[in-house]
Length: 132
Image (cartoon, rainbow, N blue to C red; front, side, top):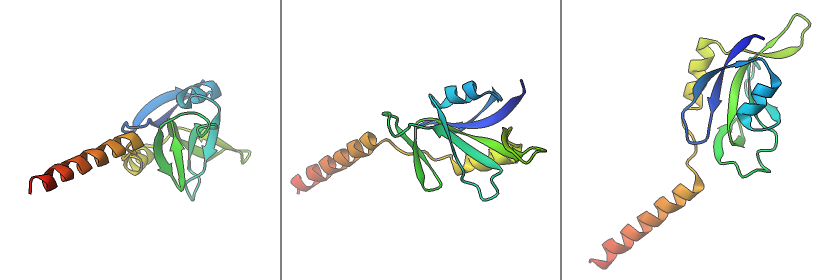
């Protein structure tokens, strides 16, 4: 079975390249369940696969793909038409890896961390005011 390079995005981690088999089960293993495609490129030369039920699970928010906030791990894979005109997954090119690494470099900070930072800011403001 042929291998393909994909770019994996886990919540709170930077993107990384992984070589996987062109196998549905291995693709599902990355996202933790059934895969769902998200078409986000105008030319459709790349596609994101995420967990089909990411909203039903308690997965952490990860990144926006287009206008969709994806929770849990997802990956980007190349997308090409075969001789019969059918679309199929393929390895990302080095240029695509660079492009999508930059595009998805920033990840979302979990809400709990944002709330904790806000509380810390509020407490420090209160301390500052009481010392006046």
